[in-house]
Image (cartoon, rainbow, N blue to C red; front, top):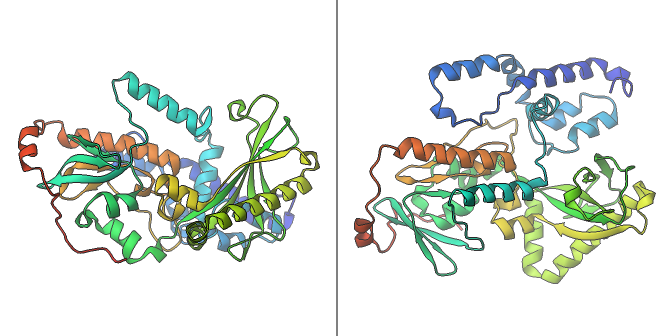
Length: 410
């Protein structure tokens, strides 16, 4: 960066200093914060003592504002290439800090490999997994969840339930509205504009040969590309040549990620709903334009690319009921504080929550951690309890009790 832009030297040195400071960030993964003792909390605060001053300044500045302080256009582009520009820049320092400190990596065989290992471990302990069962509602009697009814007509009783579904879907479809708390109401209903989300269009291409000239990660310029009548100047290119399980022998896989926002989700969702064929056509046109950009940038890809799939924010919504098609939690903007939900529902003590929406910035690692926390909270709250009496619950079964009959706005 210094060789590229000597005139930015003071700002570059400050950037590096901040990244080093944010290496002290402690990511809480061992147990929920509320289970920390006073001594453990004091140790945590002391370990991150150097971050406080920097965070008070940079948590109130957006990435776009920070990037404008640099003179060189490539450095400005680099800082804004991956994160949505409305994020606070403190988040950027945090990501660079954990990566440069060796505290971040990719699981072998990607997300699918990680899931398969989790399933294998769960089943080896006697767990039973049912896939393809879409939950329709949680049945509640006297403020206790007694069972879950699925779309296939099955109803499964349970002593405790951990809901790892999308949080918006959970509180608007699976549970009575009265269990929505202030955290959820504020973000999903009252002031969603204060808690923006983002998603992406992901395009996947097969390359019919192994290549070493394409870097593992790169900014890809997209000249003349538009989505939702908005220009898309660049995207994020990922080359998975380091992961042999992602593609057959002698081939490789490319991913192009284009950041999308809430209005873009509405565009894709409406397009798919109104005219599915137009939706497919639009995805095909986009794939062709990106493929042409790839071959212009890397001539060796000429006649070597095959489009494998194009996933839009509407895809995320269809497969996962994802709120606004988002694959991360609410954006950490300069205008809202980082707040963590404790995964409990007031008045429903045998139900726990897990998933990316409970703590920023969301995503797969946070989803996994909150699953662990849900089990730890369950054990903490109920270890000394007597088992639930199923006989009495069956006698009370009937229409689920609704503690608050007010309806959500359309």
